[in-house]
Image (cartoon, rainbow, N blue to C red; front, side, top):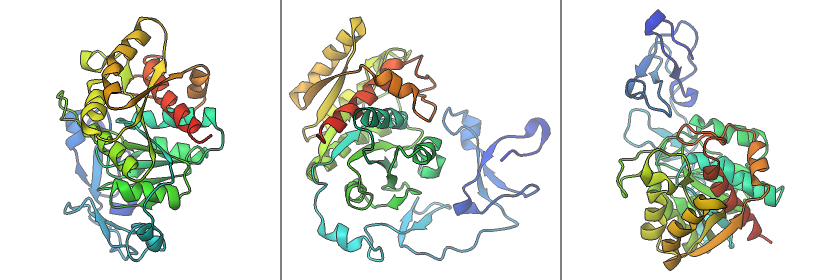
Length: 334
């Protein structure tokens, strides 16, 4: 919605499920933190309430409270809770039947991974499991909405404090189980929602949680596939080549073995990727995957590709690396 106010006006986002449906002329209470900070993702005001017309009290179903103990906590029906029709299934199931699980530390990798899967194996059912390191409401992601509309995603699962997916779950473990057995996914992609929190330190980054996702996938007898975060254009040295966050998540946090995909790129940059990824070979299986045909698949995705403000043309390697991980995951199904 666009707020009036001349030069003082600003763009604001409302989640109708939480605050009701704002209408022209409504007074609204805003949280302007992200706007004041000028954040690249979500850098605008958020509607906290429409004071003169509050939404109805929540009436269920569901007993899972997410965004807990905040003013906008929400009650949802979890696939794994007792009142769910899926409870018995998830109570008794203990694995994901060898399902490939692609892990990526940024939300921007999601459409590229999906493009890689579908380019290699059209018609594959892909589900997105959203971690709570970025945005908590999945509704914030235009990428997921458009992938769903295009039929590229079979559905989404929100885990931890995240909410708003087609299926809700308590942990990444039940989220993976739900992706496989409720949504019928053949491949799952695990990543945080839009936005992330980083501090310029190896450990102080919300995407490090993908290392734990590797462990969860392995415990559930899935096939973890690590997508490397790479860049040929990031001005920060720690993110050029293989990002130090990938080296931390896969090299230190992930205790289970994964297939870590190294895109087969040519020239000096390809040699740099292979050299920097080599250290991960002590703990994981490094799989070089060719990228022929993936650029065309990326150009055809129904969403705008952007990572840290850079598009496909500006940082092609970043998206090819994610798409190569998707291609490898699809090949594991054959």
